[in-house]
Length: 489
Ligand SMILES: C[S@@+](CC[C@H](N)C(=O)[O-])C[C@H]1O[C@@H](n2cnc3c(N)ncnc32)[C@H](O)[C@@H]1O
Image (cartoon, rainbow, N blue to C red; front, side, top):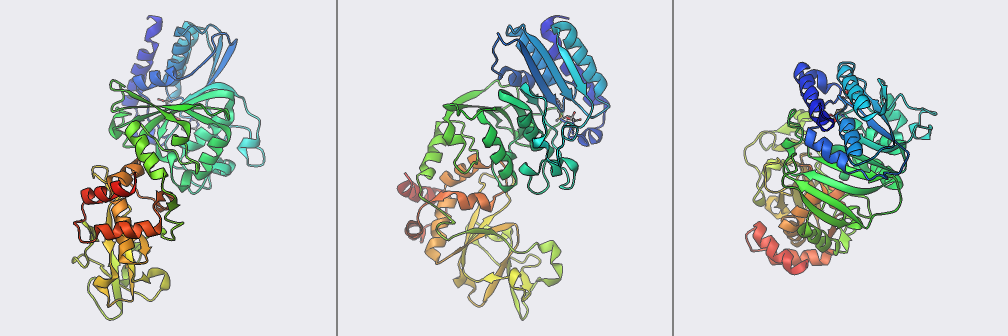
């Protein structure tokens, strides 16, 4: 065996392990293994000083140890001759023999020290009054990882101990990331392959605050196709590689690379201003080229938000499957219209269409909303659909006989002062510009009202004028683009 073939051998052993254990077993541990090219790419991202006497590496949730193999191999091949200590945490007993095998190979070939901890990476650390971050911990120069992707209950010990970064029922991946940040030395670097969901949304707000309090981002890689990253396991998650440094010194730019597949054969690079990617409100905008940067700066020139215009987006009121007893299929005395996302069609709201439960019989105030003019926006779209933002204009004039209406919770709505504003909001949200902006901000297929409410938009007065331009025209994306191009330069 030559020294440069360990990563291939380690990957082969990983594939053998994957084939020997049913997927359902591996899922319990959030086990998805990194492919060889991704492991090598991740390892290549670290900066280090060849003169440094020793380096301490951490691979938390090491699996078969592929990432440690890639990192050690890269360090040695790049001429690092100092002492290397690799610490691996792995709590699945079934994968430990393969991990030990790989670590022993590394030890012999590259004269490294290793420590294998078979305990839970999070809860085995130093607790102080249920606060992990207050405990002293071993610190590392380099942390590499593909953390487990697994939801944990909000009553679990790790969530209680990491309450500073948690909101709701969190996912292990960002708890591993938060702990990784805690375990980094000052100026140390962490490279993780993770889902993209942390970049926006309220669930991750506390985590982002923690991240940016301690670290800066230096590199991002995104995979443009969801299903190619963990080829063996076909994980349908949007996945990215991130590199951060534990420092408060912002780099001048963040290197953003993207590729359509996990072999990096069509990799493209873009060097984005730090503040373009990490916005003031700590959302992370993954801008991969000049066009996307231009989209961001056009929208960021708008001086208002929906909230500041008093046009707040809210989520529909009715979880229909829970309220079956008050839903009706036909109009009766005392029923009101109930709108579902299926009623949003070609920019309009078409109701009734003959589906079940289109009427609601209730006088509960929390289940009803004023029959006003609205813009309705679908909350969920499928990844095959061309647009994320799919809207319909609802004008109360069309259903004047009702004092109230109601909305299913798969719709978001914005109450408008008049039809012109509904048309104006439709024009901007139905434009290609805002759809692209939303995609840069949020990789998921869900439309989140917190993010829409924080998005820069023209003033209410301008929205009204924009709306007037669209009235009388077909509600196409092209017509919206023509108007938006005049107003938002
Ligand atoms: C997504 S896999 C990645 C494995 C490997 N690092 C790779 O990149 O191929 C995550 C690993 O973390 C392990 N794991 C899950 N929860 C853990 C915990 N609390 N402490 C330590 N390891 C854990 C799983 O058994 C699994 O092997």
